[in-house]
Image (cartoon, rainbow, N blue to C red; front, side):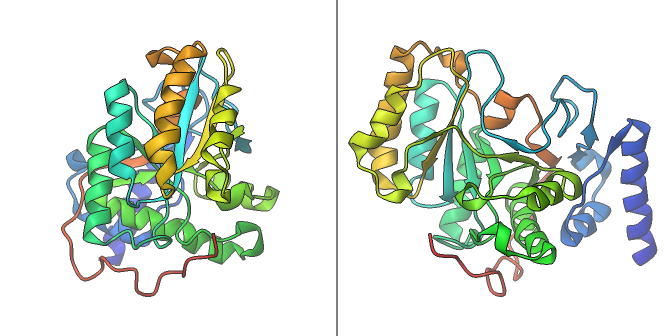
Length: 296
């Protein structure tokens, strides 16, 4: 089995080298499962430095470092942190009714355990409706205070969970609190192949801002500004009031439906390292032994 695994990993690397690109790390559990599957059941996307399409994944096109604004024309990218939690489906339905997709940056063990049946169903609902699922680390820590090995754990836990639940491994990550020094960013970019995403408009909903304040932030976003908006799906007033207000106000401020992008599409990269098939629930679908939630 060990030899088979080495041969499988070597084949992935060879495919990446043949395309002039780099295959980032994947968790051992993901590699073990991929090695057992027929190649027709999944796609892997390596880093490609010269691609201008979504066929190849990248921190290509200058996407090293921290990205805090989208680059597509007249783009606006609503994004929601800290789930999966109680408002994910409502946000999906609201965005779908308006004709666009949003981005969720999810934890594995923060407000709830990602493997709980309701959270699994919420993730599957969002993903099946075409919304982007990115990583927000396992337990929402301050990454600058962690060792490289601890950061690896924060990454791998989410990648493994999303691979089991959805059959995907994300290629986009948002550091909790927006905090990532150069060493952290380099590890996420160069080892794990992540595009690191922050924001340039913060509703401050998770900091206790009033609805009126959050709406005042939205009021300032006028086309053709290139905007990534930070919101939190864990805040009821965001899902019920601020997000619907944002859709209406952004349209009044000059953005058309086609100008609303997921974060990866707004930055012109493929948001996944692996796209395949989900697994069946088993005893490994647990948050036991995971890093514990940090204070929010």
